[in-house]
Length: 441
Image: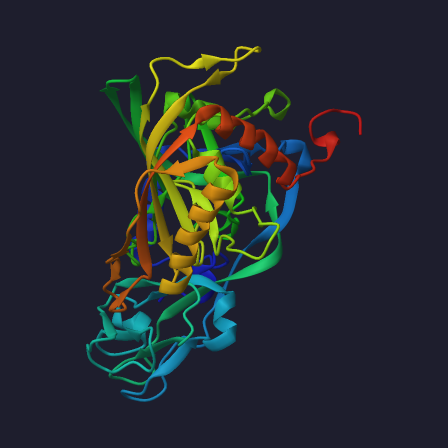
């Protein structure tokens, strides 16, 4: 069986099949190594655009908040058919960012004469059979542990002494990440030319087969990411393929950076000069959440994010603003004395929320209406309706608290740009040590 130490990357042993495959990978790849560099996320406060700025190699390492893997509460069952808890619940669960449970394939690794299934439950003590909440892990299967699982995580097996692997991930306020890492394995990629309406680009699918799990990828926090430059390709990974325990190889997958998105990866911070990108009403919506009326009245009850740019694994409540169908309502824009363009437009805006109850969503609708009357930055052309959205997660037999509202608004684009300039006064400033970018301090 792969021990916890091996899963965490500190074990040197490999299964017989894994050792043979590792030797084959080393031979085929000719001891290939890939170099990954650490990048830090920067969110431009005016329009929510994401940029990734390279941390200079001269820094050596960065200490930041991150994720730390550690063993579960147990690694084998105690009695036949008796459930045991392997991940803490209650208040302690809020520190758990996720994890993995693996049921070994080989009976020897299970510590049994014959391989058997392991049963997992995320709602309470597990049964030794499949139920409405208990899930079966057959030999060789793995399952991810969700974040903040307040009932705890429980497992059960028909036999006592059934061994398994449980690795939990917890938030830590301080972890040291190297600015550059070298990883040994085998790199594959395939290229396809896409001739689209708006651009002709190369799409590159990349797969990297590593001889061991890349622990830095598990530990890096949401504000950092490791990116690799390989010849003309720039890539990061968005998934890891299924692990066959006996093979003990880790397959990381992703797509290389497309040419039309190169503006968002910044290798030279001295050349980085962000400006307002969006031309729609998004700055008006982002400005709403910091508006507090000078009299008792409605305020925005949750944080708003641009669509497709919501923070990673963000706990509710929050809302995402999606702008669509921008239409001009004038024949031509008005040009001001500095040639600034002013044009009356109409848009359909969809706000999708999670973790928001009926009272707060009504408060939000009333807040938008009051905000519109107070400042007239935008006008509502119709009364919005609140819709409940079915967003199931079958593993837990639950529905997310998901709602959607669609607004039809009228606004002047010059107002959106003026609000963007005001919004920067409320942005959080991030300071960087100048000696990272220049020789002198």
